[in-house]
Image 1 (tube, helix red, strand yellow):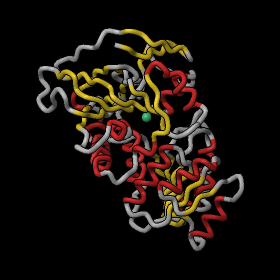
Image 2 (cartoon, helix red, strand yellow; image 1 turned 90 degrees about the horizontal axis):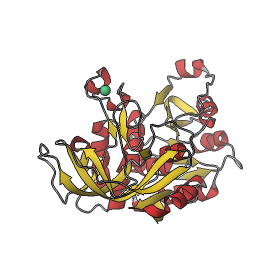
Image 3 (cartoon, protein in one colour; image 1 turned 180 degrees about the vertical axis):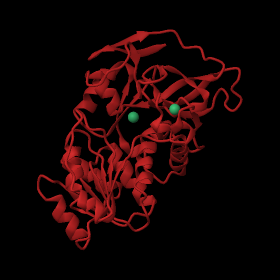
Image 4 (spheres, helix red, strand yellow; image 1 turned 180 degrees about the horizontal axis):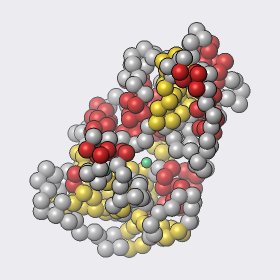
Length: 347
Ligand SMILES: [Zn+2]
Ligand SMILES: [Zn+2]
């Protein structure tokens, strides 16, 4: 089979590899659509470590080609997507259902590197544990199937934020994750949705996905707009969905424009790790909460499959570019240049 194998920073080779044979509790999937995630880009550019060589790719959908002997709930021909993290199942967090916090979090295609590590979906075929496989809804496209993974992470963030109907949400960062959060916030009953981003092109997408108010902080102060839009109360939820060290200063700044009882969600990792100082009295007297959100549990992923199957979110619209596997380096370059939104590969 054809596979894109990463040997080191910017050292990606299209190779002919043997088709993996599934173990008794695995399935073999013929990959139909796989989308590029910032995690893949960090490994490609050398900003994140991984065991080498590795086939990247953890957002994907496809058709089951072969099932292991002990797999009785899936069959050849099923159209599926995959939860790309491997949970140990035995640590305290796994047993509490908080799989995302697993002490030995492993992954498919470099999604996580602590526990079990498996090759990913930037290939014609991928072998995965059957328990990680979810069937697509009848009307779902393969592209929608591939986007269940980022949808699940976004859904987890709004569930952690404990969004209640009518609440005002600020989403900082209108990349693909921010756009999914806008869509989810809408169907979960948010009141006003305010979105900020430095790129005007992304603000246009934000409006298309349902933002009520958009802000480019290069031109307008987020604080001023939030105060104007919320009768000076501030937002109920400030979702920090932009990557990079800016998140550290945003977290302390967000305390100034988050309403009492509001939640500030740190959704993106901060690399390199950066500390920040916080006004603890704003947390104490205003009962504001600082909340972390990192990927999803099995429960949240299952819910994301149902949300995607409902057709109530325009997932197809997120994919702006498609490439064949042979052109993966071109695809990575488009993603690195932040052209468009999601970049899909069709192996
Ligand atoms: Zn991802
Ligand atoms: Zn665990």
